[in-house]
Amino acid sequence: MPRPQRTEAEIEAVRTRILDEALALFAEAGWDGFSMRKLGARLDIAAKTIYNYLRSRDEIYLELLIRGFRQLHAELTAATGKHDDPWEQVGAMVEAYVDFGLTNPHMYDLMFSWHVPRYDDYVGTELEDLALVELEVALDNQLLIAAAIVACVGDAGPVSDDDLRFMAIRTWTQLHGYVAGLNSTIIGYMHPHPDTIRARMVEQIQSCVSTEIAGLRIPVPSDHTGGAR
Image (tube, rainbow, N blue to C red; front, side):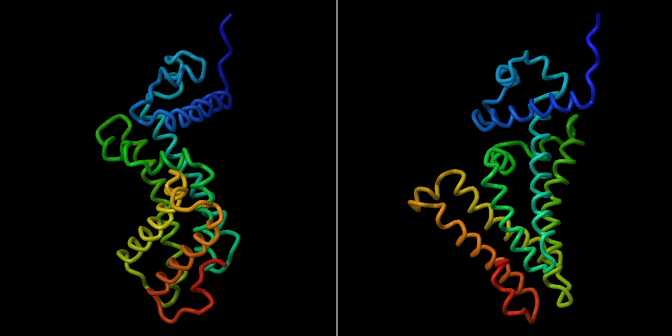
């Protein structure tokens, strides 16, 4: 008697399990050490079974990135939704970004690792369309930051595209440096109790970001140059 066809929910559950284990394997073995055979062993299934759900290591990788950037976007959006004041929204985004990076270190490392393929590597391949989706989802986070900057500047604008790009990059580099430093344990060598300076570090980043945004407009209310808190 033939096996009943899986429902969409069952298929999605299997894909989710595969992606969860794939993320753990990427964290342990890196890009070069990842293989479908190793992933199958973790899942206790034959490697060929995985191909019924995901075509290759690259497709798994892109699907994980899409998941990660969408989750980040959702958490940044949720954080800003708790505030009406755009300056407080920017501060909330800073804190939410740090929370995401520290709560999801394996995903964060995969999203921002230097030693993995990028969109250009997939141009002209069968995965180009999926890679484009991943790129657009990733850039949605930059657009979210840019929109918050525009809201802060308000009627004192307009803000040039170059300034928006610069500020989005400047904000991300501050946040990424801190999160990556903690996740890699490097900051742990620089400070005996890194957890004790987290609140101070977040507040300092919030203050720096707010001050730099303030430079794009005049005047700026003095009580809004210190970030979200």
